[in-house]
Length: 284
Image 1 (cartoon, helix red, strand yellow):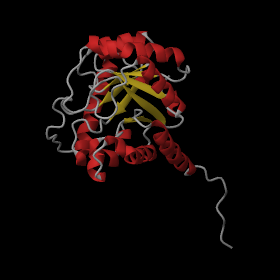
Image 2 (cartoon, rainbow, N blue to C red; image 1 turned 120 degrees about the vertical axis):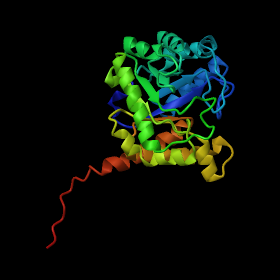
Image 3 (cartoon, rainbow, N blue to C red; image 1 turned 180 degrees about the horizontal axis):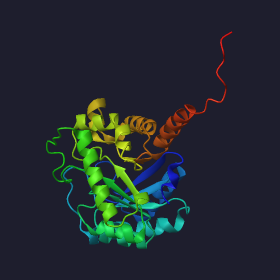
Image 4 (spheres, helix red, strand yellow; image 1 turned 60 degrees about the horizontal axis):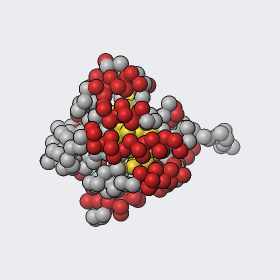
């Protein structure tokens, strides 16, 4: 099981096989992509997330055929070389892409549409038993950042996730195979993202393992006066540490070893709360 009961925070390394990702696409050469995947595992990644379609604001749609052409050789090669306890996640909204990826060794589906783009995705997850990540997004990548509006972003995101969880369960997906993601940066303004990060504990009350994908997101650049997403490693590590303290189990990041450190230190601090073994000293 990819979540490994979440005995400690898990790091999902991002491997974008796209020409138009907002931060780090362009791993066209299969050999280089495989080496990057192995490098991320050496840096502490627990999962490798491979995608062939950018979901940045304004990104164009990519056909299933083109996505498969972009990702399949890398998935096949990595599946042959990764340790058995390191799963590959396929980042797609199309069941055809996910099915081919699973055939070649992928063991997780990361669907930013939460099954809305392709209803067959839930059927695939149910029939294969592969865990699926369900993410909140207002609109779609083409429209999501055009003045997103919420009355109450926390309750609306939670309500959406509850609805998609129910749809997945009705389709036969096991409750033990569902991970939720509040969708930082997907159809949210800066204030919405900050509110979600401030209320991660409330989102955790839904009762499902949670993934946080705040890595290098633009709203942090507006806070830090950083124009280049690659300058946002410290900011990303801050969200990872806060997420660990809030109980988040899985972190999707570009910069693995830095966030591995942030997660491990935050986890150790969190564990220390329950690690007081000495009896209290009584006053004389």
